Amino acid sequence: MKSPKNDDVRPTSDKVKEAVFSMLLPWMEDGFVCMDVFAGSGNLGLEAISRGASKVFFSDVSRDSLALCRENAKLCGVTERCVFLAGDFRSNIRRVRETVDIFFLDPPYADQSIPQALQAIDEAGNCRPGTVVVCEHSHKDVLPEELYGFTCIKDRRYGATGVTIYERE
Image (cartoon, rainbow, N blue to C red; front, side, top):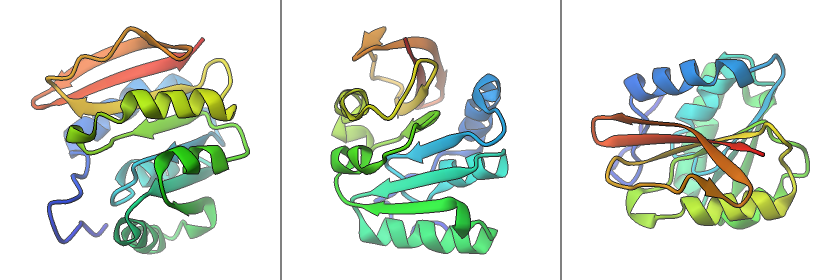
């Protein structure tokens, strides 16, 4: 898989990625659908495909990042299971018309976009009870226990990275 050429994109470390997918095992029933909302290199979405996702929506405001996602999907031979959405994360979440089982939110840490993204997911109506949202953030950020109909079910720290997982009530 190709990495970004600059520091604008921070791919999830292998350690954090492995921990996240270990926590997600109960939700990864065959054929699950994901959305990698701040896709960057496509690291999390492509890992989901390798673990059985039938479809992943890759969303990013950066056309360079989306081009990198496309390139990585092609290298992995999985482009037929990928949908690429360019633009603001709020509008991209609304554009997805099917139910998403797992959302990945890994915005730039300084953006503080996770609450806004959870609100957009809530308003879009493309989740169901049991949908999970994986939030990767700075270990310094403390996310609320409940937000927009989602309840925190796991909260872990891995060095400078925090991972909070919400489930739809």
